Length: 374
Image 1 (cartoon, rainbow, N blue to C red):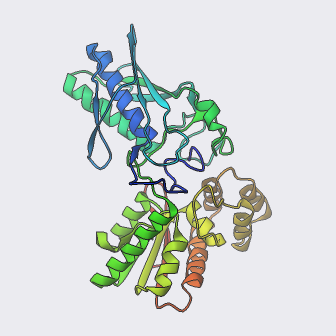
Image 2 (cartoon, one colour):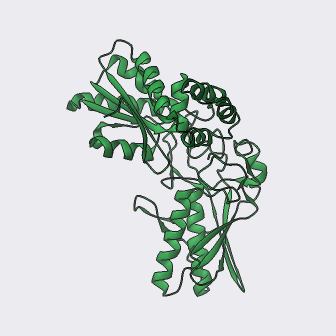
Image 3 (cartoon, rainbow, N blue to C red):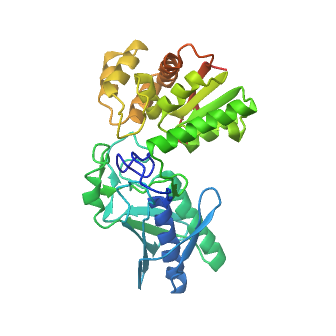
């Protein structure tokens, strides 16, 4: 789920002058605030700065902007710095309030003021859950478990996350349309915001292709994000230098390969992003292209789906919900999207001597479809 058209998980639209500065996701800030609050709950003292570990085992420190402790809770806040990314959540304070829970409960999450709640199906979280994405949840649980082990206590707590003015900011994002009400989402898959403009990102794609050609790679892959990149790299055993940082810029990748060909290309991504490519969109950014549920419904009809299912897909809240409805009916919508996306990509490549395939993965990196199949 994305907080907005210029969210922390989307590529930036314009490059500011000077060197680009990286920032931190709301998930990283929430993890730092939670780690500090948990330690203060146990010891009475807030670690400031507080150090956490990001998913790729990088350790980073955050200064605290808020410290509060009373009977039964500890609260800490971290101001989000998104670097040079035009992120709607830049400058917000992510606040975590940690309270003891029953023995054996583990770490549970609540949505405080300014953090949204999921109200419709089709997202990677159940209806009624706070809009805290899976990777930030894992980061916070890991931080609490590590601190609990170090301090010799149980890590059974509730974590309530809040973002002042988050509900107002969320009105300018995609959250309301996705059925996330009451505020923003806690996001991030790596903990780091990498601010790329279109030109800077596409330039890096070109350089990656140049490198792959120079070392003689017969097979390269361009993926929409880290999850699909890892899945495709594992699937084909590709070296790091064969992995092109495509992101949302499928057009930038394909057009350069058209004049600088590599024998084989695999495009990897999630169902929603690759549905956009299958529809003919070459810029997959959420602010510049959207999945057309009506078009997905037409594909379901072409696969033999009955009219009631076609209507359900057309009315789906998200592309993921449409996919699940088709799968429950025994229809390989993911395979169809992979084939359609491969056809669009081949059309852009034109007469270039490049064989193109597409791999669709789920949010955990499991392969849903591959075209052409192995």
